[in-house]
Image (cartoon, rainbow, N blue to C red; front, side):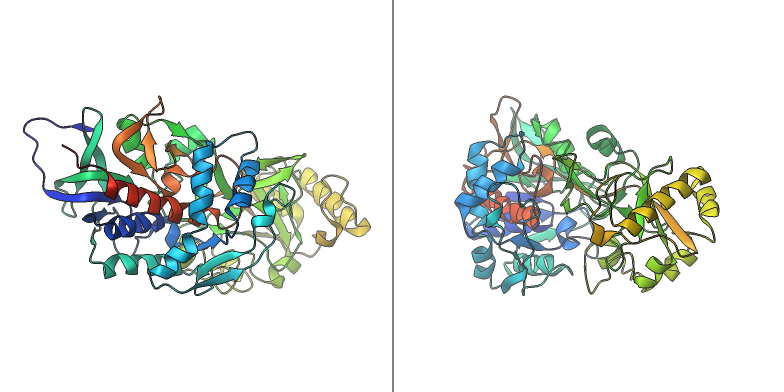
Length: 485
């Protein structure tokens, strides 16, 4: 945090400064501009890497046609971790306006997919009627392309390769941002009405991940730029925090030479198991994953949270790619930005050494540094469950039980894959960042993954819906704020 002194001069000035050029940042910039403000957007990434999590996400938002039921569902999803009621009401109201707002920008939208709710037993889940996307499609960077296009169409100034480093304050009020220009020189940016933090989460910051999420060596699925910059700046300005232990993880694979990992969904086969470093099975491998939570032992828990080995056989390898292809799921940094297409039979990744291959389970155990007798017993017990149709260990549904019996055998270690963090500076229903006494910090707003609404469970399309909704709220509120002295 930089404190204003008598000798401070400004290099650039705008009414509203938006830090971050992802979905929430675009929504904030557009809304502030359309409310009459002069807007400047700063982002630390270059053009071919900008867009934050939105660019590499599923890029859909849930089709909220009933704000009252949506509020009920959000309360249910919080699972004893209550969200302030004014925030719930603002979220329910504004997420219901997302599609209309997108269409007002001239962006065609439609229902992309109509999956069942991920938490069907929770009250309010009937509000889930589908996920809406640009042109009625998922992923492929469509949402960020549309939103960034709307930003540029308005003539809003966007400065890339310009990372924000600190907030500039005076007597507790945020007046602007200290950033670094592309040449590394300091840039003092004045925000006469407010700064909107839309910098994304902290999933690519190993220290923050270890401290707050208790993961020691995760693999990132989304943007490597999510290093907690906005969180640090907000803390320095006196912000309180919320939801810091919440996140979304997936089973995934680390790929040497790549900045991000791959989501291993095994879409074409059931012949695989999860085993711990002791060689024993961990859980029902086909447990329903609700965007970071699974129902385990009668309650919704974060899953997966520990490293594990994923073991499969030759029949699974031949069945198809263990990572959903671009045509099925055009999501993730490695796929959309690095441009990697997983091989149709997993052979390229095995040849690259990303996946272990062995002629026997004993040899595979040696590669994994697991007791071979334990691993063989584990596979034998699982195969016996497949034969009887009854998994007496974890009650994996009979229709998902396929034996691991055809050599050669394969395995890789899942870290797990960290899709995003949820926590950050606490904010209110107006997207104003709050101090520990619940007072708004003048001139400071937050939206998107830097300060997600969700305290625990979240259904599909919720994060994009939240980013669009509170991005709009933040931009409009900042534009209406009185000019700082």
